[in-house]
Structures are given as C-alpha cells and as structure tokens.
Amino acid sequence: MTDYLAHKPVMVNEVAELLVYEARGIYVDGTAGSGGHLSFFAGNYPEAMFVGVDIDPEAVQFLLNKFAGATNVRILRGNYADLPELLQGMGIAKVHGVLLDLGISTHQALSAERGFSIKNPGPLDMRFSADQKVTAYQLVNKLSEDQLAEILYKYGEEPKARKISKAVVEARKMKPLETTDELANLVVRTVGYSRGRIHPATRVFQALRIATNQELENLEEALPRLLGVLREGGRLAVISYHSLEDRIVKQFFKTWEEEGQGVRLTKKVIKPSLEEINDNPSSRSAKLRVFMKGVGGSEK
Ligand SMILES: C[S@@+](CC[C@H](N)C(=O)[O-])C[C@H]1O[C@@H](n2cnc3c(N)ncnc32)[C@H](O)[C@@H]1O
Image (cartoon, rainbow, N blue to C red; front, side):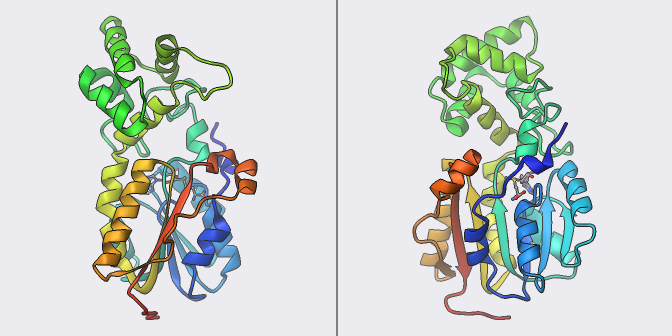
C-alpha cells in the first residue's frame, strides 16, 4: 500500500525563500511527488500560481485529488525535461521559478509493487512510469557482467560492484532474478550484512533505479531547457541527493554564470539543518543549489 503522507518535503523554508521572489508569479514544481513543497508554496503564497508536474501517474492521481480545491495549483503529468512543451500547452511561455527535488519520494521507496523497495518484496521494476521500456529486471538479467559492474560502481558508488555483478551473472544462469528480495538476498549472501549498517543492497538498488530511469542523462538534457523557460530574474532551484546529480547541477550553474547568463544565489551549497535531519533522516544527503537568470534583471 502506497503511503503518500509518509514523505516530508526537504528544506521547504530555504527553497521558498530563494525561489518565490514575486508574490504574483508563476512557479513550477517539476517533481511534485506527494505535493509537500507544493502545499507549502500554495498555502504561503496565495496570489502566486503553482504548476505541479510529475512523471509518475500514481503520484499525479494523488496530486489531482490533493489539490482538487486549490485555485492556485495546476497538476500535469510529464517529464520535467519537457517543461517548455508542457507550459506551452497551458499557454505559458516563461515562469518565475522552477523547483526540482530529485530522486524518489518516500511513497515510491516503500511501495512493494513498484520494485524500489529493498524491504518489501516486489517485481524488479523501478520505473517511474510504465511508459518507460527498460525495467530493472532487464538490466539485472540481460546486461553483461562488466556493464552491470559499471552501473553499480558509477551510479551506486558500490565498492564491491564487481563481486556483486559476478554473483548476479552466476545466479541468473539457473533462473532469472525476478524480485527485489531475490536480488537483495543475493547481495547479502555475496557481501555480508553487518548489524547497524545500512542494508548492503542500498547502493545496488540506487544504482539500478538511476540507470533504469536514465536520471542523470535526463537531468543534463533538462537543465538548459529549464533555464530557457525562466524569465529574467527567474530562479531554478535543484535539490539533489546523489553526488553525481549535484556535480551536474553545480557545473551547469557555474558555466552559466561564467557565460553571463545569470548568477548563483547559492555560491555555497545549502544543506538541511541538524534539526531537520533529526526530524527527517532521509533529508541527510540533500543539497540545494539555486540559480537566478539574468544579472540584475527582474522582468515581471
Ligand atoms: C523526491 S520526490 C519529490 C517530492 C516532493 N518535492 C514533495 O515534497 O512531495 C521526486 C519525484 O520526482 C518524480 N520524478 C522523477 N523523475 C522525474 C522526471 N523526469 N520528471 C518529472 N518527475 C520526475 C518522482 O516520480 C517523484 O515523485
């Protein structure tokens, strides 16, 4: 059973302070998820308009119900990389701000049937949307040992990537690995499990999710397009949870600033307070970066 209420939005105050600069502006939450950030924004800035986008049809259904009575929120299903086209469909050319809160929401992480969960057995799926062709099952059962090891090492920073991919290739000679628990148990048998440490398959699951959804490629393709939909003075805020994601965001923002396309509002990355981490341990790896388009402009 999917628990949408389990997700706590990360750094809401910090994001709002840097993103929402014009009280009557139009803002997009490109990864609206359970609507945590969106609720906060819509409640605190009643004169602004907020567009919530998510690629996951289940999340979109939840958001449509949640915001059914909200006059300043619109919900759309889509990939944030397609934001220019999605906005064009609503007759909007430019917006004041875009937020991306990357990764996975708590409801997805806990959902057994979506195949993201190490603890709740389900099919090896891990797609954000059923439209996507490749599933984690295909990666686990069809890639060569080297290809699999590269994914685990690159996207999961898994030091035992080679040992695990060798074990996967051995195991699937008998029969394909079909479920999350088959894979998680195989990782435990291969590398061991020390009490008190994170589950040894955590990095493997993260790597497969990133590869299945081509998350880094999508982010790289999307960032310039998102800059394109901002008006002068508009802001792009990105919360990332993975060092490779953060590196991509950091590099784009730096390059844009060097090119004179605007300025970084976060010269130093912003991280959640200790208080927030205590209250919501899933926020611990979050990093917020914000870019403002145009040097001093504030076109309205
Ligand atoms: C960390 S959650 C966002 C949570 C949200 N900020 C909240 O407060 O409830 C990330 C969301 O991004 C969505 N997502 C992932 N990739 C996406 C993409 N390419 N386009 C749109 N949404 C995406 C996921 O489906 C998930 O719901």
